Length: 128
Image (cartoon, rainbow, N blue to C red):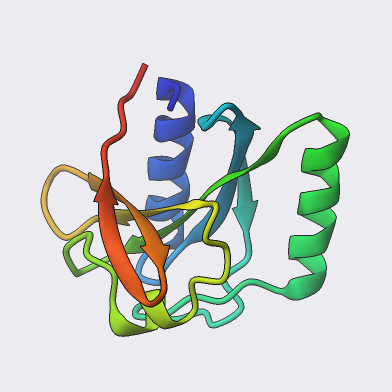
């Protein structure tokens, strides 16, 4: 992930506090090149959901750029960056990495997961 993507993700998540923020990452070859802020229709500090119409529009824009969905991010404003039961239950894109940005400490903490068959597996990532 490029540092500007990381910085924009942190900015977005901080702006949405106390509610969870959510968004998409697109790119090529597993590398996040573009960040797409999404509206959290739940407007909740403990849950998020994306509008299906907004989601479809953004997926079309990704395709027009020649990019694919590589990640889905959301924040945990007061919890560690570990997937909740709901995060796992509603993980509908097995090809995407799931990124959780925790804002519960002084410094934002990001963890990345692959969620398959209702199980979360931690993935390595690097900022470049």
